[in-house]
Length: 343
Image (tube, rainbow, N blue to C red; front, side):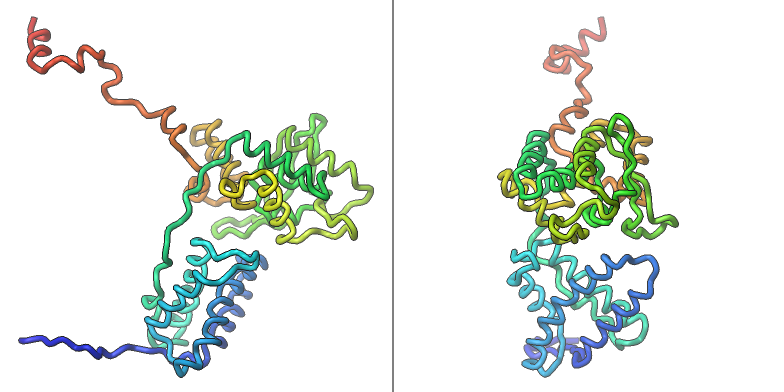
């Protein structure tokens, strides 16, 4: 059989006139799930909102026909827009947008809202994930000093000290109340995380984390400024709980003051640094399980992704298989070694 070249191939398309309604229906179904926190649901909505914004502008120009080429254009468009923090969307953010959209399309196909599985049409995000390295102890100390030069130095140092010293997620720290902190006589203690991120496979979502004397020193200074119970991290004027974006800005401003913009990206990097330095000082399976418990992970496999190993860690353990041989033994010729062994 002779095959021919077709310069006008047939392209499949999806009638996308009701895509916004379909996506909002997916969000409504997610809201019924008990294993997703409000913060997670907000994150899902924010991610797919980028597609809804793009499709509202592009859809009328292509008669609402969604194709693989159009989704490729959407992937390219993501690299041109800014996040809520007025910065270009990073690699991981763009990947997360496409991943949430893929979850929505897969759900729609599996539940027969779509007659065709269009998830293969979604592009792979351009670029590559940023290379993350652990901050040095000197850099973390500089970050603390920079937090002490803010308009709310006691609060900001306590927040950053807690993130560095416990590995808490940003929103887990923000949602703490004064009553959740238990301080020992030596200023070490525990914090009860009542609004922990919901993790699949774990029955009890809340947990208790420990902190040492160094972290407790900064928390104690903050607690001494309060005369009434309530949120642990508050706005200076109205004594209300600060929000997630406010906590993010506290960390980002300290990063800028310390000159660490290229070294630390935000609050979640402090969580990675906690895991990395803990793992460096405490090796072994038992310590790995303790670290997972502190971070709130159901499995160590997830915890291991937070540990930023580098060349210094490798240098401590890498050893040549010939390290036990003498240099003379290695450098001599095979014939000379045979003669020596035959004597």
